[in-house]
Image 1 (cartoon, rainbow, N blue to C red):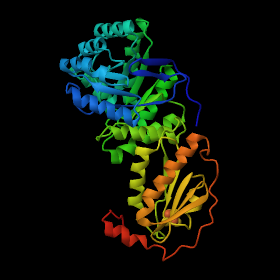
Image 2 (tube, rainbow, N blue to C red):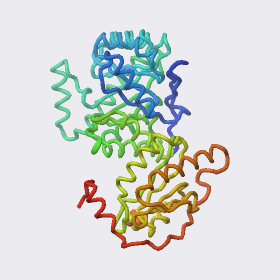
Image 3 (cartoon, rainbow, N blue to C red):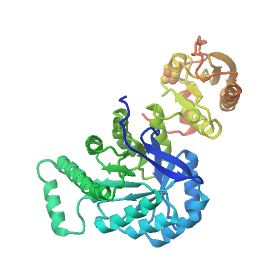
Image 4 (cartoon, rainbow, N blue to C red):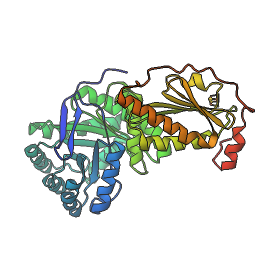
Length: 413
Ligand code: SF4
């Protein structure tokens, strides 16, 4: 891991919604965007609550129409997380959103290019101390309205180096746009430069980080369904974050945005860029030694831990006693499956041996009690390494596979 790049810092929020810093000495933040219509006030408020509860540090909403910016006046008093208005094409929407009290504006140089309009938005933000994200997207950066300009830019795409030309256009448009902000002495800026191409995302942010000291919002635009979008997003974002680049992140899935928040946070946790909230679950991938229906158990444990545990307890769910103890060293609470049984350890001490159908409840009980002990100061997280002498497995190893197949869970062959 490289040391995080030193950037300017922007601050957004207020007393009602809380304050969030981006860049400078602030931790890397996770953000997402509502999937529903902003003008449908109650569902929009409910979605913002859900995303904030999942851990989003700030939530963005689209404001394509006047009825959306009007809805903001009713939405903002009901939510408790800073709100960003996403503005495309109509600079008036930005002015209306600022008037409604949003905490940050996102502008796209690809579709609001009239400098007089941009200056109006800058002045309105300056008056209220609201930061602006300048969001350059590969998909909208090429001129759309002026056919001659578009033909010229597209011509460049099909010359030798498509990637290089796209990068050059993104940087050039960003520089040109930034000049308007800097001429107004406005520096509460966050920059993003997204693409669907992970390699272009890496190159764009590396290049931008060399040229500007503004904080960077990382993202891969339109990453696709979660199943494949995770890899497409996490590879370039992980690479950049490990290089010390990036101050706020958004994953973009064609799915419920709550997954964007969960995965974004997990990325920051595993890179050590944020203090984990809630339990950390490790689980074995299973193999021919498995003796219980581990896939089902892991999903149930994951769901319950997310609902109930707030401290970063390390919990291990292992399919057998042969390699499990070694594979979960350092776990605070661990279960190793025996022959349709679970042997449960708390910081290395065996506390229970229960039949398979009781594993979930007993494991959760031990997690709750351990968390309570930590809160009372009677135990410390990660204090004792697991030193388990595995008991002899009872019953033939591998006997859990038949059980998995009977439950109907998909078995990859
Ligand atoms: S813990 Fe046991 S079942 Fe799980 S992968 Fe390791 S050896 Fe296989």
